Every structure is written in structure tokens, then in C-alpha cells.
Image (tube, rainbow, N blue to C red; front, side, top):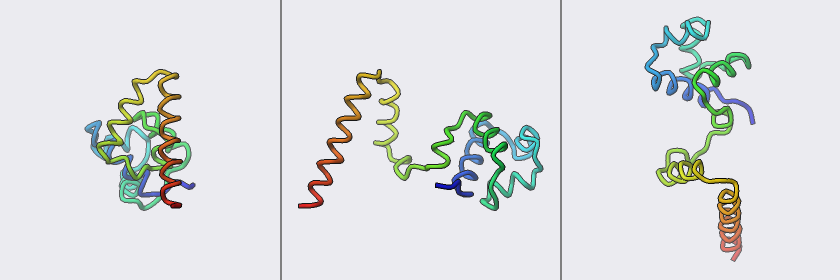
Length: 113
């Protein structure tokens, strides 16, 4: 899957706002022009690989979340599960994985019936 301008632009703008940076301040930090930053935030282009990495590192973002956005990310249940998963050890994660796989497999069987 390729990086989409909307996914990157949204992540960039949200991270900038969460860190209380103006567009001008962020452009200076990233050593890019203000107009280029605005283009990225308004989905009018894609960053170079170097700039993509700089943004991910600067804001401690997940590159996977930007490249493979999750449609469920705004769901309160998804967010709660995600928070709980971060508290699990490896053995607990194995149990959760097996459970999730069983639920999905059972759902697939129900759809076939």
C-alpha cells in the first residue's frame, strides 16, 4: 500500500496541533518552506522519505499508522482495547491473539451459514 496524501497530511497537522506548534514553527524545525508544509497539510503532495522519517521521529508517530490507517481508530472500544494491550505481557498477548483469531474464524463460519 502506498502512502496517501490525506493520511500523511492529517497525521502531520494533528501532531503539530497537539504539540502546540504553528505552521511557521514546524516548517522551520523541519527545514522546509511554509508553503510546502501547508501543501502537505492540505493533501496537495507527499513528503520525501527523508521528511517522512523526520516527522515520524520528531512527533514519535507510528509509520504503520500513517501508511496503514485503521478505520476503527476512532472507536472507543478499539481505543480501550489498544490501551489494554499495551499493559499485557507476552503470554497475555498470546492469549488475546488466539482469542481474536477464534472470534474472527467463528464470524467467518457464521457468514457462510
